Length: 208
Image (cartoon, rainbow, N blue to C red; front, side, top):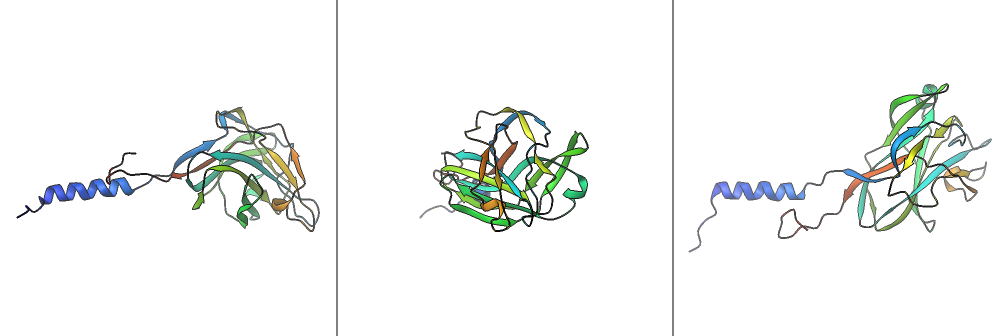
Protein backbone atom coordinates (compact mmCIF):
# COMPACT_ATOMS: atom_id res chain seq x y z
CA UNK A 1 0.00 0.00 0.00
CA UNK A 2 1.48 3.35 -1.00
CA UNK A 3 2.00 6.00 1.61
CA UNK A 4 0.05 9.24 1.33
CA UNK A 5 2.10 12.35 0.61
CA UNK A 6 2.98 14.38 3.66
CA UNK A 7 0.78 17.56 3.69
CA UNK A 8 3.84 19.79 4.18
CA UNK A 9 5.59 18.18 1.21
CA UNK A 10 2.43 18.52 -0.87
CA UNK A 11 2.19 22.23 -0.05
CA UNK A 12 5.88 22.76 -0.86
CA UNK A 13 5.49 20.98 -4.21
CA UNK A 14 2.43 23.07 -5.08
CA UNK A 15 4.30 26.26 -4.26
CA UNK A 16 7.26 25.19 -6.37
CA UNK A 17 5.01 24.29 -9.30
CA UNK A 18 3.20 27.63 -9.16
CA UNK A 19 6.51 29.49 -9.01
CA UNK A 20 7.73 27.65 -12.07
CA UNK A 21 4.61 28.64 -14.03
CA UNK A 22 4.84 32.37 -13.25
CA UNK A 23 6.70 34.30 -15.94
CA UNK A 24 7.86 37.84 -15.22
CA UNK A 25 7.88 40.46 -17.95
CA UNK A 26 11.43 41.64 -18.50
CA UNK A 27 13.57 43.62 -20.91
CA UNK A 28 14.08 41.64 -24.11
CA UNK A 29 15.72 44.19 -26.40
CA UNK A 30 17.25 47.65 -26.27
CA UNK A 31 19.01 49.52 -29.06
CA UNK A 32 20.76 52.07 -26.81
CA UNK A 33 23.16 51.66 -23.93
CA UNK A 34 24.06 55.08 -22.49
CA UNK A 35 22.14 58.34 -22.41
CA UNK A 36 19.30 59.80 -24.46
CA UNK A 37 19.72 62.96 -26.53
CA UNK A 38 17.07 65.31 -27.86
CA UNK A 39 16.55 66.28 -31.45
CA UNK A 40 13.85 67.90 -33.58
CA UNK A 41 15.12 67.00 -37.03
CA UNK A 42 12.68 64.27 -38.11
CA UNK A 43 8.99 64.48 -37.25
CA UNK A 44 6.89 61.46 -36.34
CA UNK A 45 3.46 62.96 -36.84
CA UNK A 46 1.04 65.26 -38.55
CA UNK A 47 -2.50 64.97 -39.95
CA UNK A 48 -2.48 63.23 -43.31
CA UNK A 49 -4.90 65.79 -44.69
CA UNK A 50 -1.76 67.88 -45.10
CA UNK A 51 1.63 66.26 -44.41
CA UNK A 52 2.16 63.28 -42.14
CA UNK A 53 5.04 61.09 -41.08
CA UNK A 54 5.85 58.05 -38.95
CA UNK A 55 9.07 56.64 -37.57
CA UNK A 56 10.26 53.06 -37.28
CA UNK A 57 13.19 51.01 -36.06
CA UNK A 58 13.99 47.32 -36.20
CA UNK A 59 14.80 44.62 -33.67
CA UNK A 60 15.36 40.88 -33.76
CA UNK A 61 14.75 37.91 -31.49
CA UNK A 62 16.48 34.53 -31.41
CA UNK A 63 13.66 32.72 -29.60
CA UNK A 64 9.90 32.96 -29.13
CA UNK A 65 8.81 36.15 -27.36
CA UNK A 66 5.55 37.42 -25.93
CA UNK A 67 5.85 41.22 -26.13
CA UNK A 68 3.97 43.16 -23.45
CA UNK A 69 5.54 46.63 -23.70
CA UNK A 70 7.23 48.99 -26.13
CA UNK A 71 9.24 51.75 -24.44
CA UNK A 72 10.69 54.60 -26.47
CA UNK A 73 11.86 58.18 -26.15
CA UNK A 74 10.32 61.17 -27.92
CA UNK A 75 10.72 64.94 -27.92
CA UNK A 76 7.51 66.93 -27.82
CA UNK A 77 5.48 69.59 -26.06
CA UNK A 78 3.18 69.06 -23.03
CA UNK A 79 0.18 70.32 -25.02
CA UNK A 80 0.80 67.65 -27.68
CA UNK A 81 1.41 64.89 -25.15
CA UNK A 82 -1.92 65.66 -23.47
CA UNK A 83 -3.86 65.03 -26.68
CA UNK A 84 -4.79 61.70 -28.27
CA UNK A 85 -3.80 60.60 -31.75
CA UNK A 86 -1.09 58.04 -30.92
CA UNK A 87 -0.85 55.02 -33.19
CA UNK A 88 1.58 52.16 -33.63
CA UNK A 89 2.08 49.12 -35.84
CA UNK A 90 4.39 46.14 -36.05
CA UNK A 91 5.69 44.53 -39.23
CA UNK A 92 8.00 41.69 -40.15
CA UNK A 93 11.19 42.47 -42.05
CA UNK A 94 9.43 41.15 -45.16
CA UNK A 95 6.66 43.73 -44.77
CA UNK A 96 3.86 41.56 -43.37
CA UNK A 97 1.64 43.11 -40.71
CA UNK A 98 1.94 41.57 -37.26
CA UNK A 99 -0.07 44.37 -35.63
CA UNK A 100 -2.08 46.54 -38.02
CA UNK A 101 -2.05 50.31 -37.37
CA UNK A 102 -3.77 50.68 -34.01
CA UNK A 103 -4.82 53.58 -31.78
CA UNK A 104 -3.02 53.42 -28.46
CA UNK A 105 -2.52 55.25 -25.20
CA UNK A 106 0.99 56.07 -24.03
CA UNK A 107 2.25 56.51 -20.48
CA UNK A 108 4.87 59.27 -20.40
CA UNK A 109 7.57 60.39 -17.98
CA UNK A 110 9.37 63.71 -18.27
CA UNK A 111 13.12 62.98 -18.39
CA UNK A 112 14.46 66.45 -19.21
CA UNK A 113 14.23 69.48 -21.45
CA UNK A 114 15.48 70.02 -24.97
CA UNK A 115 15.34 73.63 -26.18
CA UNK A 116 11.66 74.63 -25.85
CA UNK A 117 10.57 70.98 -25.81
CA UNK A 118 10.57 68.09 -23.34
CA UNK A 119 12.14 64.66 -23.69
CA UNK A 120 9.67 61.96 -22.68
CA UNK A 121 9.97 58.29 -21.91
CA UNK A 122 6.83 56.79 -23.46
CA UNK A 123 5.42 53.31 -22.89
CA UNK A 124 2.78 51.30 -24.72
CA UNK A 125 1.82 48.59 -22.27
CA UNK A 126 -0.74 45.85 -21.70
CA UNK A 127 0.12 44.03 -24.95
CA UNK A 128 0.34 40.31 -25.64
CA UNK A 129 2.06 39.86 -29.01
CA UNK A 130 3.55 36.45 -29.75
CA UNK A 131 6.62 36.67 -31.98
CA UNK A 132 8.50 33.77 -33.49
CA UNK A 133 12.26 34.22 -34.04
CA UNK A 134 12.96 36.82 -36.71
CA UNK A 135 13.33 40.52 -37.44
CA UNK A 136 10.58 43.08 -36.88
CA UNK A 137 9.87 46.79 -37.41
CA UNK A 138 8.16 48.85 -34.70
CA UNK A 139 6.34 51.91 -36.15
CA UNK A 140 4.92 54.91 -34.32
CA UNK A 141 3.12 58.15 -35.16
CA UNK A 142 0.87 60.92 -33.90
CA UNK A 143 -2.03 61.84 -36.18
CA UNK A 144 -2.63 65.35 -34.85
CA UNK A 145 0.71 67.14 -34.63
CA UNK A 146 4.11 67.16 -36.30
CA UNK A 147 5.71 68.28 -33.02
CA UNK A 148 6.64 64.70 -32.13
CA UNK A 149 10.26 63.75 -32.71
CA UNK A 150 12.38 60.71 -31.88
CA UNK A 151 14.95 61.07 -29.11
CA UNK A 152 18.22 59.28 -29.81
CA UNK A 153 20.41 56.92 -27.86
CA UNK A 154 23.85 58.45 -27.34
CA UNK A 155 25.47 55.03 -27.68
CA UNK A 156 24.03 51.97 -29.46
CA UNK A 157 23.75 48.68 -27.61
CA UNK A 158 25.16 45.33 -28.64
CA UNK A 159 21.63 44.39 -29.75
CA UNK A 160 21.32 47.26 -32.25
CA UNK A 161 20.93 45.99 -35.80
CA UNK A 162 21.04 47.59 -39.23
CA UNK A 163 19.58 49.44 -41.03
CA UNK A 164 17.95 51.07 -37.98
CA UNK A 165 15.88 54.23 -37.66
CA UNK A 166 13.81 55.29 -40.68
CA UNK A 167 11.12 57.91 -41.40
CA UNK A 168 7.97 57.14 -43.39
CA UNK A 169 6.03 59.81 -45.30
CA UNK A 170 2.26 59.42 -45.59
CA UNK A 171 -0.23 61.26 -47.75
CA UNK A 172 -3.95 62.09 -47.88
CA UNK A 173 -4.54 58.61 -49.35
CA UNK A 174 -1.88 56.56 -47.50
CA UNK A 175 -1.60 56.40 -43.72
CA UNK A 176 1.97 57.13 -42.58
CA UNK A 177 2.20 53.79 -40.73
CA UNK A 178 1.46 51.99 -44.02
CA UNK A 179 3.66 54.11 -46.23
CA UNK A 180 6.32 52.64 -48.48
CA UNK A 181 7.89 56.09 -48.92
CA UNK A 182 10.76 55.40 -46.54
CA UNK A 183 13.88 57.49 -45.82
CA UNK A 184 16.84 55.97 -44.02
CA UNK A 185 18.20 58.16 -41.21
CA UNK A 186 21.58 57.93 -39.50
CA UNK A 187 20.49 58.44 -35.88
CA UNK A 188 19.52 55.66 -33.44
CA UNK A 189 16.00 56.07 -32.06
CA UNK A 190 16.11 55.04 -28.40
CA UNK A 191 13.58 52.24 -27.91
CA UNK A 192 13.15 49.01 -25.96
CA UNK A 193 11.02 45.87 -26.09
CA UNK A 194 9.79 44.10 -22.94
CA UNK A 195 7.88 40.90 -22.38
CA UNK A 196 8.62 37.26 -21.74
CA UNK A 197 10.38 34.41 -23.44
CA UNK A 198 8.38 31.20 -23.62
CA UNK A 199 9.78 29.00 -20.81
CA UNK A 200 10.77 25.36 -21.14
CA UNK A 201 10.38 23.37 -17.92
CA UNK A 202 11.87 20.00 -17.10
CA UNK A 203 9.84 17.75 -14.82
CA UNK A 204 7.81 20.73 -13.63
CA UNK A 205 10.83 22.56 -12.26
CA UNK A 206 12.22 25.90 -13.35
CA UNK A 207 15.19 24.48 -15.22
CA UNK A 208 15.91 24.18 -18.96
